[in-house]
Image (cartoon, rainbow, N blue to C red; front, side):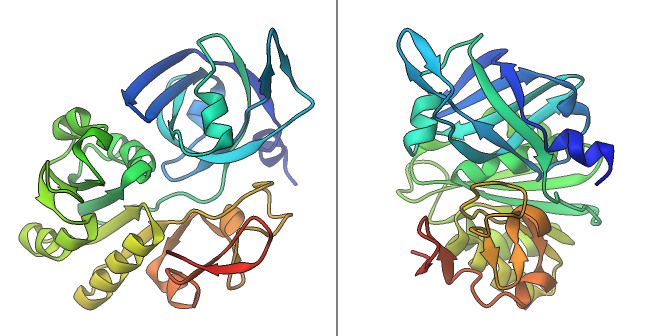
Amino acid sequence: MDSDVCARRKIKILPIHDIVTENEIVRSFYFKDNLAAQVEPGQFVMVWVPHTVPPRVDFSLPDQVPMSVSRASDRLFSITVKRCGETTTELFKYEKGDYVGITGPLGKGFSVNGRHLLCVAGGIGAAALFFLVQREREKDVHFILGARTKKELFFERELRNLCTSLCITTDDGLCGTRGFASDVVADVCETHEIDQVMCCGPEIMMYKVFSVCKRLGIPSQFSLERYMYCGLGICGHCSLNGFLVCKDGPVFDAQELEKAADFGMKKVDKTGGKVPIQ
């Protein structure tokens, strides 16, 4: 293993440089480190959130989760986090100056080949694609931003400034088009002559986008989420029909996912058993 790979896989204890509230359940945590110069859109970091035991931090209870990088420039990068479980709830207790562990960047990111791009994001999947948009400002980039409700949307203002067009969908129809992000993919592709699609979000939504792109003959890539305990290809919890999402992904192209029968259908749960994706 070369020195560069070893450096990326070594945990760093970093102070939180800043915290930005994106909405009621989403925050961006900023860090200063040279990781910002190494990471590519679609790659992730493993984030270790030690449990707080007032008035100190207990480092004997490590808990790591994978999180997409949402911004990176100079020596500053951010992860954008949705409060949805024990670890993220713990992280939301942290303040500027508190320390967390970061390992990365890890995995395989997006590979952009088209000139007219469409990014399709559902929920917190907007984080990885927001980073991609920032790196592709010279191209014609269209964005579909989906959320359950208006109050769960984030990055809306920034995306309007960065993208050629922004289409918003919400499940309840209180903002933008009523429905899911996948529902409007075909229309956007045909209207704007899209020649490559990038997608990140709930897997059922991504499978629908995959099916639309296959029907239209448009190359597509998808950032998958699976349980990752190690992020290094050791534990096997992120297995997908012979692939390890942490090493072979998390970004896969449509040709690879054609070979993965469980894509959009089944995943490995916390116990290591396969369960249906709902």
